[in-house]
Image (cartoon, rainbow, N blue to C red; front, top):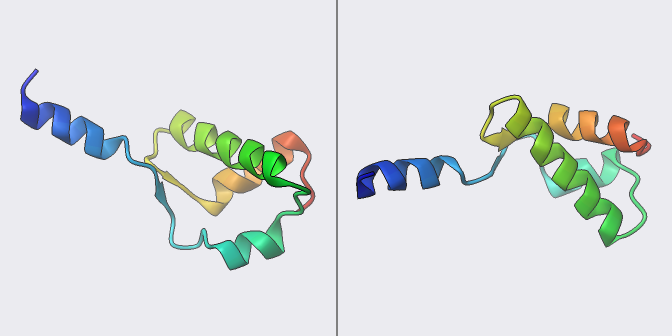
Length: 73
């Protein structure tokens, strides 16, 4: 593969956050107890986004992850 193809693929692999995914909104929306729970939630949201074929995490991905992990919203 060429360097250009690698660069394009690696650029696509960067995780982006939807404009609605901000610390203040997430703080109000998700009741997590500690950093481990927060990491579990965000990792699950990342899987949701990737499974859907998107390169960014949306509030919907976080909501789906929260539901799966039984995090209170």
